[in-house]
Image 1: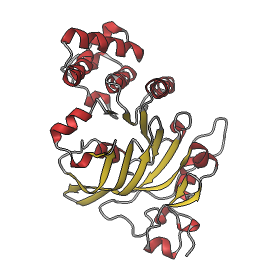
Image 2: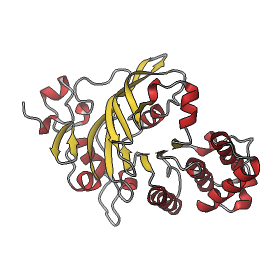
Image 3: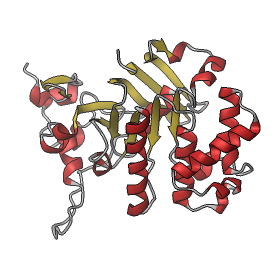
Image 4: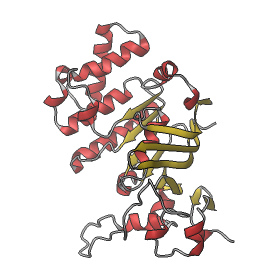
Length: 318
């Protein structure tokens, strides 16, 4: 049985400009110990999908329909006090911006110790001891546990977020852009930490990113998301060497290549306004292969080979 199964999830935001259809009929599964990369441009609905799994959406968001089944239990049907027992302990999240996520009035060690005391009923001394050990495991000296978030660099704050996420040894970690705005050396270190976590604790990881190159070294499978929908699913080899969807092909062409002097490729057009998304295939206004049916009907995800799915009318017989 899969560790996590998301079925036909639909999430909207109510705004003064209309209803934003952020996640529109998304389904996928993640196995135990598997790393899945969730890739797409900004505004594609990746972060909303991650937050929906933990029901941490802002007040103006609504889950219209769907299931988020974790270990056989639909998280969307649980009450808030039941969810608190799962968040952090069973499922944890590495948020995108540690400076706005970490409490500025709490020492970094307190963030970890507090979670340990809440979920495991530990005394304060034991919780602080483990908090320091976990910080050291991500490369932060134990004495820095007494620092406040503003006393640390961006890379160190990101490692504090990772330490907080792994302290309770969760079975599933949702990492939302864990390497964004960091230099390449720190990025590499954080990805190595996630790989070590997968290998050591057998944790499943959903790695949310806009950068396909980030997933290449860590993910088992990749989900390509655009305008609230999944357009392609496959192994890293499928996605990188045999991409089928025109959007996936465009993302790969836009990755800078070392030593190349050619102009960087840019996918034509812009992501759609999700208060009024395009009919049919959401990508058709930017697609060089769009035809009549693409503008009228949304293509289903179909299998093109074992483990490789694509939602594109180019691969569906009519």
